[in-house]
Image (cartoon, rainbow, N blue to C red; front, top):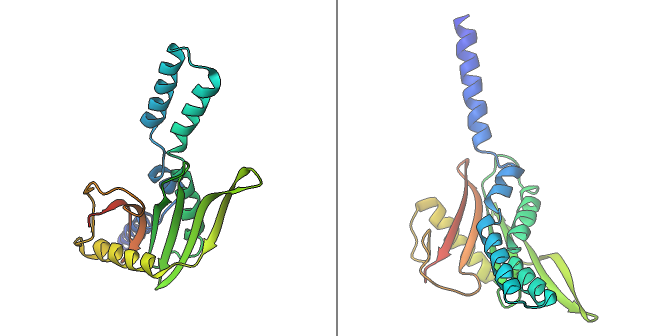
Length: 198
């Protein structure tokens, strides 16, 4: 009986540890959740415009543009889940998500997977064709600059130190200055926001 209890405890402990090192769809959904406060701010802005008796078309356009600023989180979620399908359950990996072009709203994004020094990329963007915007989500070849960024991020994840990356923003703005990372390193799963600091 004693051996049975010890075996059961060990089995349950290993099972819980394995579950803690797995990434579920709900974990990904939570990490890339659009903050409800931001959406409420967009709605408040629309309400202010209504009080000023602005026409409905303008109000709807302003509200849609405000909410569209956060749509890149949906792209991050979808493409991260696609990348996770490429990885065996126990292997280490790094997935980075970032805004590739912030001149348009919704923003163009990139999601890049580094798995055993193999790189895979998805690019989400809108292309203007035949007088309308067409949504595109397609594979792309990861370039040298992206690989260098991933290596710097991976270094930070492994050591906790970097001259290039930190958990606190240095106020840099622009493309490729803020990353949403999903990673497994030595069996430990992390979902973290990182910033370029120089």
